[in-house]
Length: 502
Image (cartoon, rainbow, N blue to C red):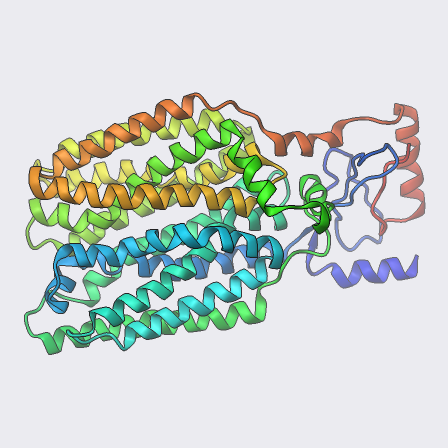
């Protein structure tokens, strides 16, 4: 009893609890609330204890921070592509590849990286991701000379490789650290960091790097931009080494407890991939997710070209329009995440947001050339709210459809689809814009968003993770026995998590 109380006090600074579907039990000398519940696991006498730790918020916000740093580097070239085209004396397609290398790198590396995630866990992934991200930023510092385009491409490649270790983590991190009613919100916060990084990437480069003719002055401004991103990435790397943890001592949810109970000998990565490929609902989501996010990648990469074509000299406003897209998308992501945690209406919400992305893209396509920048800001904001807001929806819906498969594997396949379609759409839309203008290029994307909307409508809502969590409501004892168990627990100890007795 004394030892149990001491353990409770030692953890009181970090632990938060609620009794799930059971009535909360309090004692006069309790120093904290302990979230614990149990479900049958094979037989009616066994169960899992769960607990939430306050440090989960530190972990998810730290992840969001280094995801921000990496996402910023993806778009920092594209939003001032005309300036880098002039500085490095290359064509616009070469500068587009500084963005598309993020997409291309992901495709061959995603499978070994998701295997590594399953074998080594979140902390190793975080350390490798930040080491690569930091290395990429310092390589770019050395590339701020007109004849060193290959060096800046090398730095961008290192950063793109770091992205492979980042994109599959939000849903895995949310499941490992957060309770059943928080996972969608936590995943949204993880994606939020990536979106904020893109937003900063749209906003800051046009401010730091003005379109000047003097190459020495231009090199100075580019070098300053690279030094800032390198300093930030280095600081984040140090914080990850010190602070980032693998997982909590006790699982946060029944679904996660069951997943962790599967031994390494029972798990096969290859078999998991094959099961996912045979999951029809998931494969429909993989393709529809790739179509939506691939369109977003194309719009983001080519935004500067589209804006400059209709509004010459508006590089700064092009960045602000990109910022508007992402800020609206961050709001959409958080609202969708909270909505999912409250309603669990994954299919309906995903279908609605997808349809609104299509409508937003149509409106943006036909208003871009009206000659009014304020109209572009509004339509871009609406497009961003739904198209960018869709990102965490896809991750969380995938986890529901594929539980108990690894969250990193399902997210990896979604992102792989997005990268493939992103490359195809970016190259194709760029060529269409060159030959037939921006309206034709955007209509091209609308056609595929329509296809994705129809495919989303055929996905059946098979929420497997939710089914695992609601097993806690299955009663294996009579009401009288259950009440007696609770009373006995209250009379004996407040520090030992309650286990339901059969």
